Amino acid sequence: MSTINISIERAKESGVGNIDFNDLPFGKNFSDHMFIADYYDGEWRDARIVPFADFTLHPATSAIHYGQAIFEGMKAELAPDGQPIVFRPLKNWNRLNKSAQRMAIPPISQELFMAALDTLIDIDKDFIPTAPLSSLYIRPFMFATEKYVGIRVAENYRFCIFTSPVGAYYSRPVRVFVSDKYVRAAPGGAGFAKAAGNYGAAMMPTWEVQKMGYDQLLWLDAIEHKYFQEIGTMNVFFVIDGVLITPGLDQGTILEGVTRDSLIQLAQDEGYVVQERDVSVDEVIHAYNDGKLQDMFGAGTAAVVSYIGGFHYKGVDYELPPVEKREVSNKLRARLMDIKSGLVVDKFNWVHHVPVTQSV
Ligand code: COI
Image: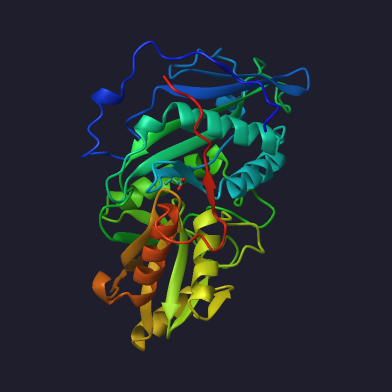
């Protein structure tokens, strides 16, 4: 039983009737409530659920200027018995605190994180969509709220969670551009953190390739421009001659994806050979030319498992096999989605059941 005290102010009217649950673009609809806690005098305080609304920010709010801002992404679905379930929330709590540590933001306790999550999902469970490929996207985030223009670690922060009913992030296979011009992260940097600045710095390079007809950038390492890192919206996997390969976490330059970790475990469980290691552009192009590059896909909370339709490198477009021929990604995607929806036995103990207590 949680000892966290969360005050609750209910929305006067629900907006659930205004949402078209048969057409859910990613991130444009919001549930009725949000969770907020503020950090001051050395502690997270004033835990509360309030109606979803704008924040009022002082122009000198430190996060806007100096970027102490981090976030997470999780998903909730309704199990067949109607109970809300969240996929591996403790992994996200853990990663939030790793990001917080890197950005000098105070950590949050597991108890507060889980109590906030459970209470919010319970109150807004009517916003959990049930159509295939849809879910309630959960966005926890923290940012420095101190009103101070000097550069130093801030003394005040806000932790907020809001939720958003969503459909698929990518509705078709993604085309990626392998960048040898821009870099996302270097060893010793903050690439592993889910820090707002990592996404902000990727906007212009991504936009540049989008104008050329690609969906995303596939980043290479910052030193040799030779080894794959990640896609920014998702981690990347390759299947070469039956072996599943994904860049390792050892350099601290890629996000420690929860979906990435889950797919590695599922693939091992399916009996595939899985390698977490450096994988170079040369290796992948050689495999492609030898007919051994069988699959390429991205993995992320929003993206789930997204097929990569093709990639571009140094003026050449490489086309991947049609989606129906992708044995590995199809198998892993189906198993992951079944677990996340509570449709199969959760042998990994990944699914968190949200206690349902609130009634309107
Ligand atoms: C997520 O997958 O949760 C992310 O934060 C990535 C973004 C594409 C929404």
